[in-house]
Amino acid sequence: MAHSLIILAIYLITPVIIIFLFRKYGWVRSVGTVILAYAVGIIMALAGVIPPMEYTDPETLEVSKTLMGKIQTWVMNITVPLAIPLMLFSSDFRLWTKSLPKTILALVGGVISIIVAVVAGFFLFRNSGIEDINNVAAMMTAIYTGGTLNFFALGSALQVDPNTITLTYTFEMLVTFPLILFIVGGGYKVFRKILPFKDESTDININMDIEDDVFENYKGMFSRKTFPKMMIGLLISIVMLIIGAGLSLAITGKLNELIIILTITTLAIAASFSKYVRTLPKTFELGMFFILIFSVVVASQFDIYSVNTSALSMLWFILFIMLTSVVLHLILSRIFKVSGDLFTVAHIGLLCSPPFIPPIVAAMGNRKVLISGIVIGLIGYAIGTYLGVAISYFFNLL
Image 1: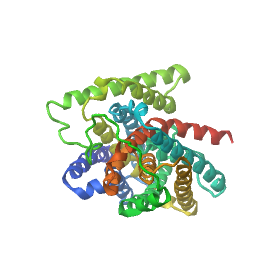
Image 2: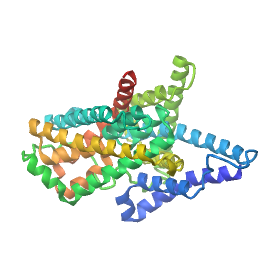
Image 3: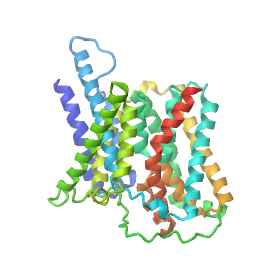
Image 4: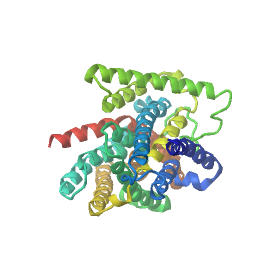
């Protein structure tokens, strides 16, 4: 009992420490909060902090494991549904209608390339021994169109094994991080040569405060002016979770996570069109806090012994999806005459979500594509879960 409560305390305190370090040190901002949370969870797993699967004294340790498992399940089932609305509230989806045609073409080309890459990869690797490849492919669709938020939401909704979630996300980071380093290190110049088209005026005349850490600016979260309004956002998120749970009970007679996730996503997008909800302060950051808790919990369930030959097949599967999607998107962008810089922010916006756009734009020195990249990333937030669910059902039908 005491051991489980200590681990629960670590789950809750770790995000607070990460956020403190994020505000204080530049290298933490470069690495990213989610990656750090995952690292802490994996270290906990490798250090043996979490009770192992087998016990020599079932009368004591088995009880502890059962309680720990229940705690982990409850934490995961609560944090993601609360995070989704909070992270979507501040998204101004009216930007969709203000995007220029080239931005829409870049978005459509990116989504098509990702879906084609996932489907092709599924048929190529489905006999390679990858466990639960249907849902792995679905989660890859979700993360490569909507980022980490959709990845975790879909993994939770489809009730994917936590170890599979951890392996998939770990390999996805190993594959995607070098691409980001390549682009920031000057790789965007290669895309400019492949797509030597002139940037149209992609500046959108919208009053939007753009900072390097605009998506994770934790300063002032607990001030007297901000905290009460932020709690209103949390209350609205809780109400949406209750509605989703109620709808699930009415339709299936039980709590179906897929119905709950899709319901709260839809409600959150609708609520974001309200200026009052959209301007509630720090809701994105509060949502990230819940995602960080979830990340530590999931990663702490990592099992090093699961990294075998079949797991390495998953690495090749993910690498295939990433490289194929980039090549296909380049081809479509060439056809649509999308500029190299617009292609870059579009693909990163989909693969990595909006928080990665400002650093990429700063590296390229082309602020004109900033809003376009953010818009594409926000749309990815909205559609990622739906696309992942569609892909999952499609593969299950096969």
